[in-house]
Image (cartoon, rainbow, N blue to C red; front, side, top):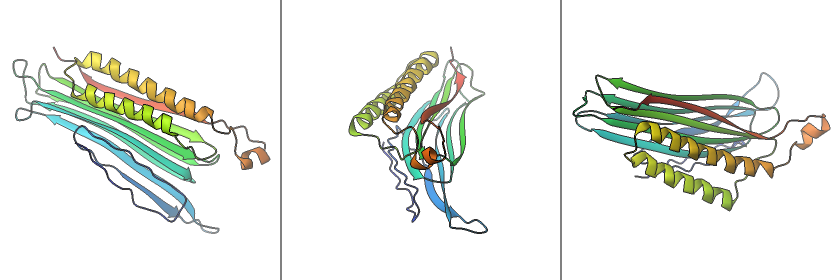
Length: 232
């Protein structure tokens, strides 16, 4: 199942580009809003939230969902981003076990030497009266910071789309949770490699940074949270 939600437009310089293909639906919102100071011109802020939730139980023994989101912003003064994956298995047993998988990949690119970033990444799994169940939640948040707005070229987008297809396949697979964790970690490593290669092509400093003697370098930060039980 595929789900696409167009982010709300803004007259400010925040640009949100979302690419979302879900194994079974997840929602997110992106907004760019002005933050007025006591004096001076309006300042822009970007607020982003993405996530996926899977719940397996006696009526639905298997539920597997994933999301893969790319959001790109021009120069903004402040950015608040959140990524969450939650998986729950409830009320099953060793002889009648459940499997719940929730995986969320979020890629954020922000530009500017002086922006303020708040990043939250949450992955949690719960087995409730569910002996022998397999429950896995994985949240992977990639934050790309560059002085100038980053443009992912066609080659980078093709490679990311290929990772996304393989993530979908892994999410729907019947691999044991322990092996699934390893395979998903490997995909996250590929995403980091694609982003690092894209960042390497960008200027290391902006004009303003050079004028002030700044030395900030572009970079990629991965926030990873995995939680769950492999089952028996």
